[in-house]
Length: 119
Image (cartoon, rainbow, N blue to C red; front, side):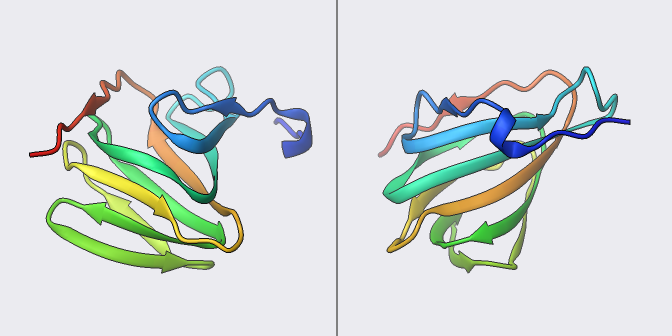
């Protein structure tokens, strides 16, 4: 069993992102099958188009964002749930006026992240 506060967990800037930080809430040392991360994007922040070799299950905690998943663009807000299949390009843009935050659960395993160049 593990109990901790998100206030105790360091937030690391997402290198490829803009105005975005990530906290690893549950890592592979605690959960053998899945990792849980929390992302926070300031208004106007986001992440570029990229792919991952693992799927993502996401739950929006607060704020609003535009997310591109493959050829589809959606707008999400508090309480929405998003599934992103492995290998599908996706990007994020925080719409403001408040921070956009979401939980992201991924399988523990090798994950290769590739930035998708704009055409």
